[in-house]
Image 1 (tube, helix red, strand yellow):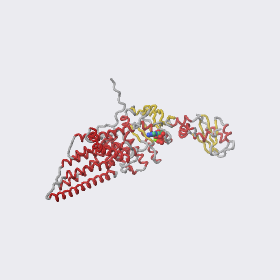
Image 2 (cartoon, each protein chain N blue to C red):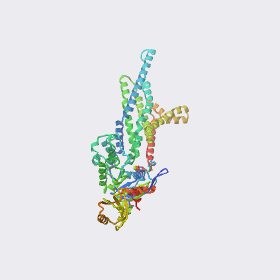
Image 3 (cartoon, each protein chain N blue to C red):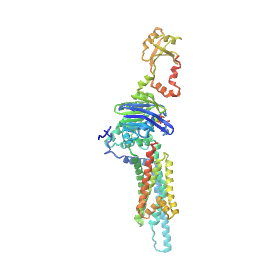
Length: 273
Length: 322
Ligand SMILES: Nc1ncnc2c1ncn2[C@@H]1O[C@H](COP(=O)(O)OP(=O)(O)OP(=O)(O)O)[C@@H](O)[C@H]1O
Ligand SMILES: [Mg+2]
């Protein structure tokens, strides 16, 4: 058995080279922080988070005063139930509105500015491009989330609450955000128009949200369970209440992977036209 | 190094290229010459594995462009029609990014970046954002991108578009210097460019190859006769008839300038001496005499316009032939 001789030895040695994924992440992060998008989206996110937290705290305070007047003496108020649960539940909607803005440029811009042809003719796999872009926007999002921890940290100075559901709430936001970003990346892969990409992800996420309504309409039937499972609402509620269930984690992770896979398919097939 | 056999590319009903066949040897520079919409970019996209051919096979360095894209991509440097630059990066950051995607790192990366920045005179703009660069500089950054990893095969789609004359000459020198060690295929619709830098020219029109040869051979092949132009100080009224009596002269034609006459003889004969002696003997005041070579431009126009039935290159001379 004779093996065919290699015609040319590979020109570059891949052993000590920086993997392309890392180069893509570094470049994408650079692009994000040069453009105003991250600053605008980040400010809106942080301001909304802070403002909602403030509203819920004031509301809770008013309730506490009422309670004290009615019962006399001291009343126990629960920050976990009255502030954090509401806050996280509202953030779901805020994330749905702002994360598509972060992801809309990821692939659409490459097509528009003709750098797509360069990426596709560079010795990089489509999966590396998708994963690199996803990780970069995920890092931006996680950075934003970390800044919001100032709110619970400040509250912890003045009051007492259970950290566990707060942490699982953050876990929920991280998973939910990852899923939203993956949907956004997919939407960005199908068009060269960033506005179209953003609205496509709004649309997909809203539909996913409405499944929850449909699920509760169908009630306690097998179909109802399936439909509710498909919506991201229910899973998030569990986590916010401090219930960490593998079923919910599997939901988010598989949803994210599915969306990345779809984006991969779209990019991979788009050049075969 | 590059071998293209019978490739056809259809976009729906439109046939962008039709059974194109050619090859580029190792170390050779080939020009792909054709008017707008001829199919140059389409052919290059197939060669870089960006799009597949509808029919036929294309190979780069022995690897099939459709079946082994990874191997092909490793071996090519590609400058697309639009320079693929990221506006928000500086020239330095951009080249570093490209180098890393190409698998360069450490000292190799630095060396590659320095080499292309020097060869394309990008040193002075290395810290500027690409968004703020002029078109010519962006084109140079695009070229630097294709050269950074010193690939054995270069595919350059209109490499000198948007450059100033000095830069055009420099880039042509650069491409010439690549010959021998690299296989280069470049597309252009500028004829002098093809003659200046390439050993071989493929002329493509309407998706089909209409001619393929060295620049000299191409013009020789289409030339059916030698022509000389003669300018006289005082030509008599019957100058055409008088010249016809000179041995070897086949046709004599007027030109828009009444003092200049075009004399044609059989291919391969040189009758300049006879014509000169005759003109001087007649005391017509011979001011200038020079051979008229058919330029590649004439060839190009002839080949690409023949199908439409209007051959402008011929109009000027041949209508006055008899
Ligand atoms: N994606 C596409 N979809 C449909 N038609 C296309 C596509 N790309 C190219 N064409 C058509 O294929 C033909 C060849 O185009 P191509 O871009 O290869 O020409 P070209 O020789 O590069 O021209 P130019 O000198 O203007 O760059 C044109 O008629 C063009 O309209
Ligand atoms: Mg073109």
